[in-house]
Amino acid sequence: MTVLRRRAVLAGAAAATLGAPAIVNAQNLAQGSDWPKGPIKIIVPFPPGGSTDPVARIIQAKLTDNTGWQVVVDNKPGGASVVGANIAAKSPPDGQTWMVTFDSHILNPAFAPNLPYKDSDLVNVMLIGRTPQTIAAHPDRPYKTFAEVVADAKARPGKVNFGVLGGSQALVLANLIKKENNVDLNLIPYKGGGPLVQDLLAGVTDIGISSLTSFSPHIRANKIRAIAVTGEKRTPALPNTPTLEEQGIKSFPSYSWWGVYAPAGVPRPLIDRMHAEIKKAVLATDVTQKFIEQFNMEILTSSPEDFAAYQKSEQDRWFKVIKENDIKGD
Image 1 (cartoon, one colour):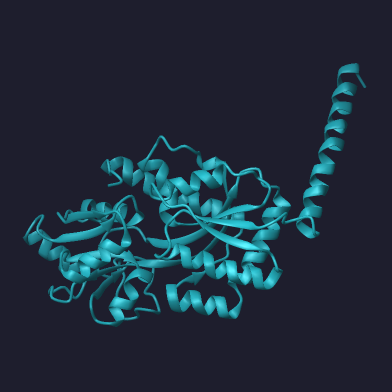
Image 2 (cartoon, helix red, strand yellow):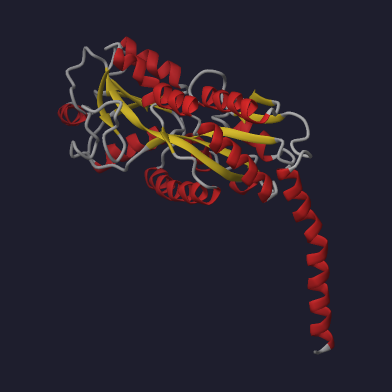
């Protein structure tokens, strides 16, 4: 063995020896009583209400029941989830801070290239679940399907008002539909789901798109009419409402979803422990029932790797549409 090679081997062995206690310590933390050290914080980068806040609070309650941990939900709204995501990204990677957020989070880098954090500052923990988005019409409008909306908009270019949430996947999907189907819909961006729903209920907009969660109570009350769902297949919650593809509309399958993130650098044993506990909480019969009844959620509990791959595929798809169509967030 040469002197140089011997030095390299010794250096590698020393590094492994130094790194081993850190790995063992993280494993001990995840398995023993040294973690968590105090309250666990779940950041929700949206205000109370909507869907993300109750999803986080249902998980919080079950985590506390299952583990005895003190778990708190900390709402940090602002900047289309940027404020809360930045706080989460810059939190110590000690396993005390996590974030539950909504699908619009992954589009922020495309709409706001000067974010105060990078995607790599946050690591994927779990894709909790998803639900297709729904396109609905005011009941006074004649539309029974989205195909009828397209036909009317082609006969009256720019006259059909379409409410969408600004900076969202729905906004990108609506622009894609306009382009791929050569139809001039008048898109009206909203800063929140609440105002969008209220204007659709009032007939200010002819149609609107949002998560099935937001629209379901009003569909059941016959205050709005579901005319399409955006998933790959019909949803059990709306078995008589056809998908866009069934109606001959060119688009991509699109879903609203909820996911868990952690600051980059959290030791993998802690990620794995938290993933296991959240999965146990979500798959509890009472929690699953709430998620299905309240959010029409398809439960996924994806692994960190599968969630990261899903995020990448979604960003590749939607960033391309945003760039090609010069779509702005508002």
